[in-house]
Length: 334
Ligand SMILES: [Zn+2]
Image (cartoon, rainbow, N blue to C red; front, side, top):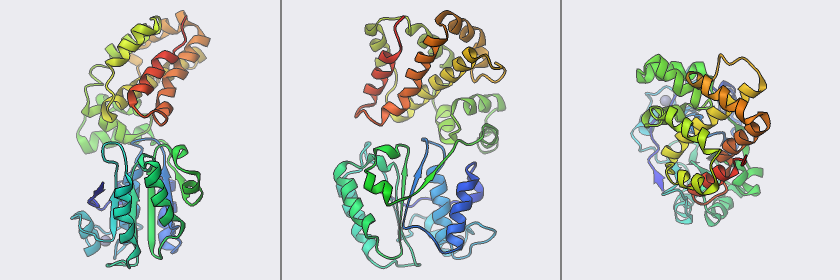
């Protein structure tokens, strides 16, 4: 699905991953922009925001202070979604099909209309099916002059090796919790304690903090955690029944996964004997300590591993429900 380019973005409004911004800015300033760049990192860590800041900087006619100006004709056309030399491909119902790639690629063969660059951003590039990836690969192999491909993915391992080997890879790390809290409080006017809770759960991914805040998950967090702690003593049949009730859509499923990951980290902190002052679920410290003591370190480790594995499993199962089933069944029986 080809979507409008969306708004121009400034590096100064991206939080975290300053090193990435530095590398991208320098590539533009020195005229050494790689033809294919792969941004990889967790969902919601800010890859697309950074990509848009980079593209804005590249296309801006009046760069200043290491950032795009936001007001030149190119910046304005991007804001209005009518910059003809910029295309963004996104999954349609979870898949990027060959038709979408075939639509976009021939247009890249023409000379750019406005400036020296034609840019194609493929968001969630891992959602390309095999045919689509092969079609994209043809263009990546021999990029027309002045073409920039930006591939964005949270699962680089699932992309064809040939795509990986042709890309300049840029990894994204977690954004500091303090910066996320500041963003939530200043940009959204969120109460500081709620912002702190969402930031603690989001694994350094501001986009996930926004998802958490837009969902019911934070309100249901304590009940969800209690249900999961008792689920580990249940037989497979009961676990699968529980799994049926966990939301599977990307927004819904993700927020519960994040909560479970935060519990896994908390339990690992409990069994490793570090200070418990910084638990993400500090308000449930007593329950978590009691659970860890009852289960013992080895079992806690195996349970946490199963929970943390949910994220990786999502890339390998066609349906999100399969990944949840695998996770609940992966918790070791007593
Ligand atoms: Zn500009």
